[in-house]
Every structure is written in C-alpha cells, then in structure tokens.
Image (cartoon, rainbow, N blue to C red; front, side, top):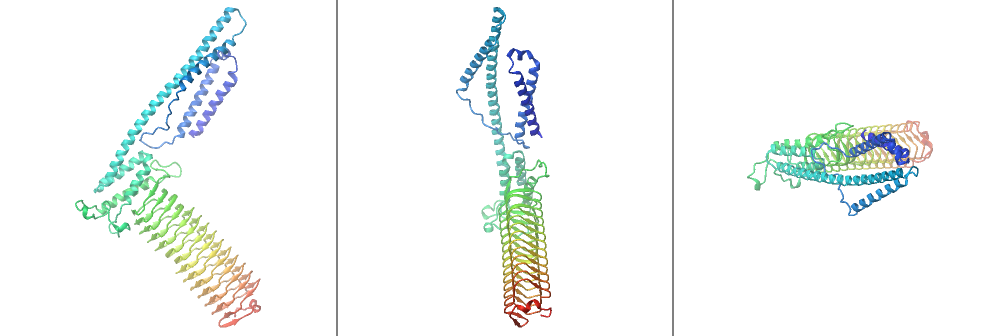
Length: 597
C-alpha cells in the first residue's frame, strides 16, 4: 500500500512540475515573474508531492525489523573529488554571466535612454541575484553533505557501541551455558533468545549456539545411552563426569532435561509463522538453518514451523517427535536418525526429504505429506506402522531395501516420479488406489503379509520381478498402462489379479502361483507371457480377454485350470503345458476349452 501511494505521489508531483515547465518557462522572464502566485503555488505543491513520494519510496524500500539494536549505515559516503570546488566556482561564474548576458539581450529597444539604462541595471542586478542563488544552493549542498557526514559518523559510533554491547552480552550468555547449575544455563538460553529477537543480524549465529548446546552428548533419565563418538559423556549433559573433573559436582540429568526442553521450545517458538499472512513478531524468518547433527531431542515439537536446510543426521529423538504441517524449504536431512517414540510428519511439505538408513521404533506418520523433490528412504527401518496414505511424491520416491515390519500404508498416494521399492521387505502392504505416474519398481521385494494393490494405477513401467508374496496378493481392478513384469515372482498366498487391465506387455514367465489364482475378466491388450509358470492351486481365467499373443508354453497347472468364456484374439500357445498331469501340445483346441478342462 505504501509503495503504491509513493508511486502515485511521485507521478502526480512530476506531472504538475512538468506541466508548469512546459507552459510557463518558455515565456519571457518578466512574464513569468508577473504571473506571481499562479506559478509559484503549483510549482511548490508539485515539488512537495514529489519529495514526499521519494521519501516514502525510500522508507518502503528499507525492511523494518522489530529491533532495539542500532542500524548500521546503509551505505558509505565517498569523499568529494578535488575538482568539485573549482568546478562549482566555474559553474557559478558561467551561470551568472549567462544570466546577465541573456537578460541584457532581452531589454527592449523602445523607450528613452534613461528607461533602457534602468532596465539594463535591473537585468544586471537580476543576473547577479541568480548567480548568488546558485552560489547559495552550492553552499547549501556542501552544508547538507557536512551534516550528512556528521550524522553518519554518529550513526557508525552508535552502531559500534551497540555491537560491542551485543558481543559482551553474547559472550556472557554463552558462558552461562557452561555453568553446572541448571537455572544459570536457563538464564543463558533466554538471554540469547532476547539478543536474537532484538538483533536480527545475529539470529543465525545464536541459533547455531543453541543447536551446538543440544548437540552435546546427553542421556535422558531412564533411557539408553544416545549414540555418539565412543559414547563418552560430556560435563554439561550427563549425570556423571570424568575422573579429571571429580572435584566438580555432577550435572543432574533431570535438570538438564528441563534446560534442553527450554532450548527446543525457543527454537520452535521463533521458527513458527503465526498465520499465512503477516508473520508473527516473534518469527525469525525463512532463512534460519538448523544443524542438530547427533543431538538428543526430547519430545520435540516443531508443528507448523518453517525449517530451512534442517540437518538431523544421526539425531536421537526420544519420546514423541512432532513435525506436523512443517514446511522444509531446503534440504531436510534425517540420515541415520533414530526415533524411539512416535514420529509425526502429517501434512509436512518437503523440498527434499532424506531419511537414508533412519530407524523408526514406533509409528511413523507421513499421511498427507508432500515431497516436492526427492524422497530418500533407502535402508530405513519401520518397526511399527508406516503411514503414507494420501501422500504426494513429485520427485523420485526411493524406498529401496526398506524394512516395513508392520503395515505400510500408501492408500490413495500419488507418485508423480519414479517409485522404487526394490528389495523392500513388507509386513502388510496397502497401496489401494495409489497412482504411479512414473516407473514403479518392486523387484525382489518381499511381502510377509497381504499385499493390497487393488484399483492402483500404474502408468509407467512396472516391475515385480522376483518379488515374493507370502500372503495374499490383491491387484483386483488395477490398471497397468505400460509393461508389467512379474517374471520369477512367487505367490504363496492367493493371487487376485481379477478385472485387471494390462495395456502393455504382461510378463509372468517362470512365476510360481502356489495358492488360488484369479485372472477373471482381466484384459491383456499386449502380449501375455506365462512361459514356465507354475500354478499349484485352482487357476481361473474366466472371461479374460487376450488381444495380444498369449503364451503358456511349458506352464504347469497342478490344480483346476478354468478358461470359461476366455477370448483369444491373437495367437495362443500352450506348447508343452502340463494340465493336472497331462501334457498338451497344440493351440487349436485351446479356445474351446470348457470349464471342466
């Protein structure tokens, strides 16, 4: 609003001055002087509006912070060049001479000699007055510059004094953090918080001090030692000290817990925007980076915070961890982090989420999360439920070699990039209604419990080759728009692939179906290869449609094989197929196979 107003004022003021200059200045000098206030008033008003607009523009261009610290000089004033004064003298002389010469030439030739002489004298006086005015303007400019230099010197002096005071308070607060008394350490933390609030330029360094304090080794009361270099305790975070410090009182781990909780609350309080509009006065902005590598965090709560380049590598999270609705604007690094309690990331937004080899001992909740960049979960261990339903992966979703001990829930999730679950180990896998826009790779994955992919949509290359389904595999109503490869996969439970649409190649060569297998009403628009596949239980292809080549060469059907009303619109090959102990060669009777086959 202020910026628009400043632009409007400058525009109006400039137009007024320009209009007066165009209309009035070309007249002879005495006509302009004779016009009086009709010219002076609009010129003065337009100039005032122009100056007001410029001042408002400059004021709006400066970012105001809630700060009690002196502001540094906005720019350095360069010294005057040695030629400025002589050039000013020459300019005054030239302007004076030009004004006198122009006015002398403007004296009319009418009238007697006395009148003309009087006009010449008046013109000389006017010209000298113009010269004096230029001299006064030049002197005023020099005086203004001298005053500006004095003000900037005073401002720099105040800024240096303020910086010195800030440094002293900073050092004193940092010293308090090294005290063996919990109240003194708390006072140091709150002193640092106040310094950061009043001095925006020092916020990042103060945040780094608080993060460094949290990175000190610490074992919460009743918890196992946190992973750290050689598991050596530190003086300010453990309930014991080394022999060399035996004369110092041990730091109470319960008191240290309260200090650490206060440090966590300080960080969260100032990294949480109050609303979607104007930020809270306590908010420290979007560029504050956190480095909590190998820190021990207790019941940390960053709900609704804005975290920029947050590093939690090898961080030990004990208790409940909450990152609900957090916006990670930079990298979010949780490499090899350990979550001993529930971990909540519901509705969080990640630019890049990196959880490589992290360990989740309890529930991991990522429902509704959005990963705009890569989501790196390779080698992660989920000991309990992993909830990713309705999540969005806009980049690569990397879940290679992940261990899902219990439920892995990805219902209605959207994978706009490639999804990689190669060699992942699932307890119960739930991907019902999930959408895979890129390639979906589950090669070598193991499904200990049921695997639910009903009504999932696979738009890219899909690979389940060498996957092992120990529970039921449910793909009913799924859509494969590109090739789907299940070669050498093992289905130890029921395989439900009924009403599935295969638009591209469907490869089941050497797959093993050890339970009840259903391909009822499925559609194979590309080639469907089942060469060397093994069907131990009953197998149904009732009402299935094969629009491409169907190859069952050397397949083995140990149970009932039913192709009721199946349609083969291209070549159907059953060479060397074994049907309940009977080997059949030749495609001619296949289309006429009855339900008793």
